[in-house]
Image (cartoon, rainbow, N blue to C red; front, side, top):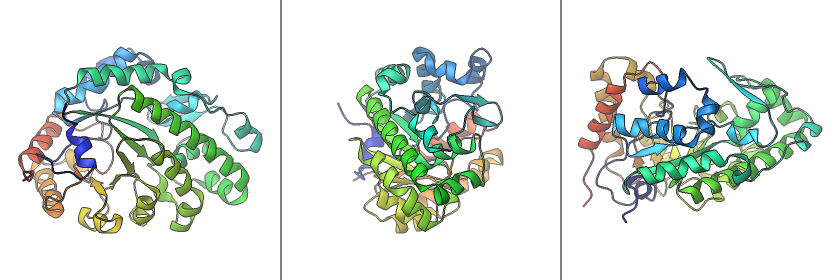
Length: 342
């Protein structure tokens, strides 16, 4: 059996076309997903393996992408740690009792995924069975900083005031929390790979809120631990991270995911050509005229110049207002304009 296209691209091997997938492709913009969500909450979908697999597979059928990214949430693993999380519509994760003291951290467990999230592992197996050998299953976890931010703040934020106060003023609490998160995510991702995930992505979505020195001291060792723990190709992603790309590459990841704020060829120079790069179309472009989407996508492909290791993606997740038809057109555009391997 040949390996999935995405796996070969992550290894910077010659590929027959540039692989395409979209962050948050499962759900959000698809009408068939919205019908399911009328009856089921997000965590309920995740806890029902057949339903979770169906939602995960919907965008593969609708868009023709080269990979299925599991329909899950970065807060799922912390439920098994003993954290009560509610996903509030139009707000995000809300933590009933934020983690802000040594005692709070001490109460957190480090669960085995077979015990805490068996439904996700079964969903991974179902998706892997449903896909062709050329298509990949992507498992993922949140980056330790991003999840720690939700746990400490108690809800989404862009300032991370309480999080940074903990980092600077309660370093023993911070490092104990990060150690438990990294250990939990490593176990979770290894469970996903055993179940059939071909590629792993670490979503450290909000790590760009940190300075270079703070990232190096407070985050990099924990992200490195998670990324080094799995034996499949890994993608390391964050937003607003142009100033952190070299350090993120040093922390790990066969591929570094970049957002739209930096030209992709410049990003590749920073992370080094011994790694792949994923990205990096501005998601909001898909809310405008197709001609601008097409021109921007072709500029990305031109900037990459056929170098092995490029994975086409958006610079962050699919926006809910995106026309699913435009996503399929984008996949077809990238595939038809990809350099052919020698």
